[in-house]
Amino acid sequence: AGGAGGLAPEGDTLSVHGDSVSDFLRHFEWNAESFDNREALPDLVKRMQKIVDKADVDVRSYAASYQEKKASLASVSKKKGGNLSICNLDDVLTPELVGPDVFVDTEYLRTAVVVLQKTAEPKFLEMYETLDNEEVPFGPPDDRYAVVGSPVVPGTATRITQDKDGYVLYTVVVLRKYYDGFCERAREHRFTVRDFVFNPARAAHDADAVAEAEAKAKGALAQLRGQCRRKFSLLFSVWLHIKAIRVFVESVLRFGLPVNFVCAMVKPRAGAGPALHTSLKAAYGDAAGGFDDFMTGGDDFGAPAAAMGGFGDNDYYPYVFLPFVPLGR
Image (cartoon, rainbow, N blue to C red; front, side):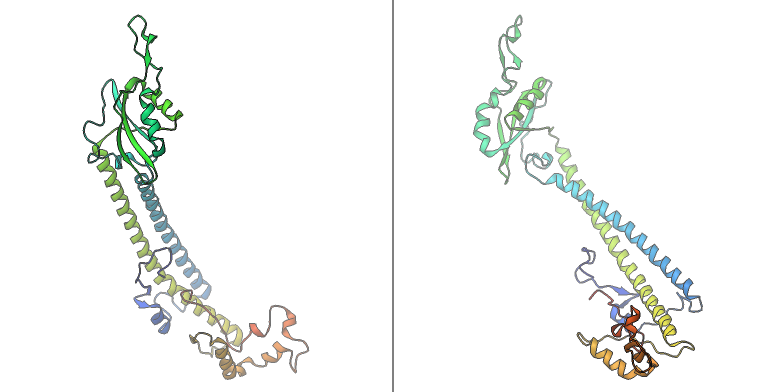
């Protein structure tokens, strides 16, 4: 039970109406309060099926809610992970890392955040001041484009940080009007300009969003676990009642009326199944009423029953035998 998709915490045990599974099996009695034994068997089975169907719908609803919260958490957490080229920069460029003068945001200037491979660092430092070098006019008023240059403010490259994947992050100050052109030229040289506006409050908000998503996911998982435990208790009980109905019906079909048989639940030791059948056959072989001869084509029958198809020695016992494994082991 503990390994079912992580739904049951380590040490958690499943129970049936407050009893352990083994105790419930050992002391099982028909619950006449829930399933009136005077009710017609087809009606009883239909009512049990409705209980199963409703439980399935309930658990699926809680499971869907948990998966939704889990996906939201993964989405929020993913933004906090990854290298400098894809991660949420609010988690990197915090007030503790960057000083108040690193980011410029005025009518004419703005700071660009550039991410590049560490191996390209020398190339970047050599050429960043000349990126988009023919875009900005610096000529006299009567011929502005007589002299052109880059929108980058010289000497403003600041190395901020690097990550374990070999990426480094720089900031440079550029003329706001030519920011988009600078981004295009940077991409041509395999420098990534991240669209980022420094906002100290947003970093704290993102941290709160992750904590909130974690809390919601844990809450949904706790609710799902609770539902699974409660529904297991209910459905295991229903399952055993259905097994009892099947044993009863097959016993009546086998031995007829009036009812004169005993039902028992037997748990053989590992590997002792064949010996158990041998002992039961020896004890109750007379109940076959000559059926053994029919099954093997004995004295009173001209052909083995196996020739009829679907019947054979391994399919028949002189008693009703209904195997089941309570918890899949």
